[in-house]
Every structure is written in C-alpha cells, then in structure tokens.
Image (cartoon, rainbow over all chains, first blue to last red; front, side, top):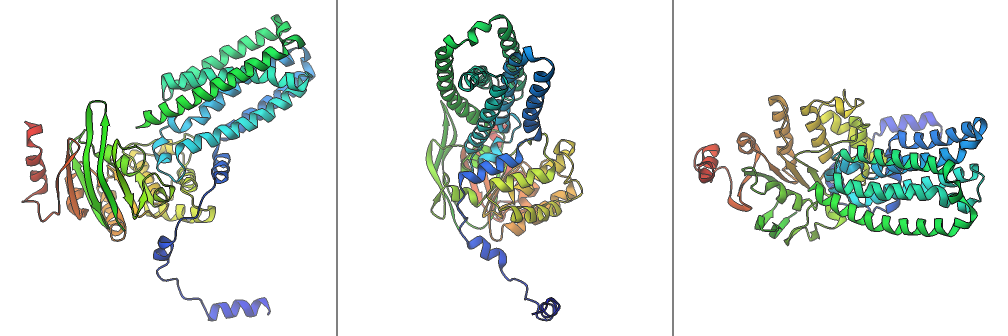
Length: 231
Length: 233
C-alpha cells in the first residue's frame, strides 16, 4: 500500500486514546532485572573524568616513552596509586555524596551498585595495567605484578581510611596516601631497581595475592560500616 | 492493596527507638506527627527496607520488604539527600530511573513528565549544586514518583517549599492518595490537616494516637501540643 494512503487512513481512522493505561501498567508485575543491567547503568553514569584519567595516563606514557625513556617505569609506578585512589573514591561516591539512602531504596541496593562499580573499575584498570606493562618492556606477567602491587596496596590503605573517616574527608586522606605511595614507587624505580629483578618474581606474586585477600576482607568491612553509617 | 507492619521494633543497644508498631495501611494519605527523636524517620526507613528491624516485619500484598518486587513499587524521599556533583537535574532523575528498573524510553518520558510537574523543566540542564533548597526538594519529590509507586514514603517533604509550591504539593499528594499508600512525616500541622486521611502521632517509638481529623477534639495543633505537653513542660 502506498505510504500516502497509509498516512491518510491513519488520520481518518485514528486509534482511540488509551483508557485506564496507568491502572493496566500498575497491575503488571515488574520485569526481572539482571546484574548486567546495573553494570550497564553504572558504566553509563560514571563521571567522564574517570575515563579521561585513564586516557591521560596512556597519553602520558606515549610522551614519556618518546622523550624520556629512562623514567617510563617510574612514571607508570607513580600513576598506579593515583588511579587506585580515584577508583576507590568513585566506588564509594554514593556514600561520600549522600546518595546512599536513595540508592538503597531503589530496586538495586547500594551494595550491588558499589560492587558493580568495583567490577567495572577493576576490569578497566586490569586492562590498563596490561597495556602499561607492555610499554615498560617488562615480561608481561612480571610487569603486571609490579604495577598492580602498588595499586592494590593503595586500594587497601584507602579502604582503611574510608572506614576511619567517612564522608568527604576520605577524599583528602586517599589523595594523600596516593601521593605518598606514588612518590615512593617513583623513588624505588630509580634507587631500588633491584626489587624489580627476576629473582623477586615470587615475592611480587605472594605480596599481590596477600594484598588481594586483605582487600577482600577489608572491602567487606568497609561496605558494612559505610552502609551502617548512612542510617 | 495493603501494607502490613507487624510488631516492628528497632533497638540500638539500650535504646528502643521503635517499639512494637503494628499498623495496616490501605490506599490513602497517612500523616505522621511527632517530636524530634520520636522514631518517625527510623520507622520510615524500616518501611523502605533501608534499615533492618530488630524484630517484626513489613509486607505489602504478601511481599516482604527485603524483596526486589517490594522496592519496585516503592517511592521514598529521605529527609536529607545528596547528589553527585556532576549531575544535572535531568541526569539525577534518569540515573535513579535506571536504578529503579525503568527502561530508557520510559525513563526519558517519565523524567520529562515529572520535571514539568515540579516546575523544573527550565532548570533541568543546570547542575544540582546551583539549585535552591526548594528546587532540590522538588527534585527529590520528582525522583520519588519515577516508578509511579504504590507506596510513597515522604520524610518531611514540604521543607524548603514556598507557600505556592506547598499548595501544589498538597494537591499532588491528595491525588496520589486515591490509589496509592502515601505516608508522610512533617512538623507542619497544617499539611496534615489539609491532606491526611488518617493521622498518626508518634512518641518514644510508639503510636499514641491513630485516627482521622474528625476524631481529634478541636484544633489539631492544640491537640498535638496537649498530647505532647509532658515533653514541653
């Protein structure tokens, strides 16, 4: 049928206005939601500066590799704690900015929201670490361990600080920790280069695993204490 | 449609904040009056599933408060709420609509409807940090209505609203109370007088009065002051 005829027929035989639409929709059971939905929502609403930070770090490494090759490892080690602190603060921003109570009353609880954010940040940072490790020309696995360890150490300390401080003071405390760890990591890349040697491979792995387990325990405590703090 | 509160209790160490409340709510507007520290906010948080009760239960048509289906029909406005600094008014509503499970198209349509309802269409693209107190409160009311809730819990909803906005709000609540359960707490007695179908007065975690305006002897404010006269003296 031609489009014009269709259009004319639609105008002549206009469908009647829906009656009792609201009652119908209210009588329906809510559709089930999956965790994938919350992951998607969190990705879409994460502040842009989080993604920009990762791009800036990547851009930095391109520049440094081109003009200041000898400080590539130092630069990468220094930025990992900053990334860690930014990500931890972003994970708990519901509580920092007072959105926790609203999110708690939504279909997805704030716990799921925080876990979704942690998952997204974790995957994004792991990918970034892999890319950075490639650029430091280290053996990939050892490079990841060396870079991820200051990251995990900063995450652990930030979790402890969040539990101790609550609210916006946590931002400043985490920033201070990140600056200190970043400085220490940068210093170690020049003056304690030996700790990045092949013979310390298993030490890095053990430290990384230990930090990961500590983070899991501390993360659970932080979540519980922060949720209790809202109310 | 029935919200059943059964022997709801909340205890913090030695202090009993909510003391074995048992109430049945059907469609209508319920005004909760009480002094500061009476337990109103704690009670409302338990109804919203934010706080776990020490004892007792809250169910809506057989759904327990801990179930996702319960929160799907719930709208809540806290006494005080924050916002992410990078959010505009529209972002705020769209974000909460997504958390409430609304699909994108539905969320966009509903956001526009509610922005118009609370007269914030012009300020929708501005950052929330530039909003006045009244604008922020109106935004909070809008987010509570996103999912067209069957249970609407409002903790001091008229705080910061000017008289014109308050009248608009009262009319809205009256309309919603026809097919939803609306529970709101306030210190403004005239709000209760104008819109509440049933008045609940709370003291030290207990309901000391439950009835309609007609059952109150004389002026509601005087009745309230008499009921709480021991605390004043």
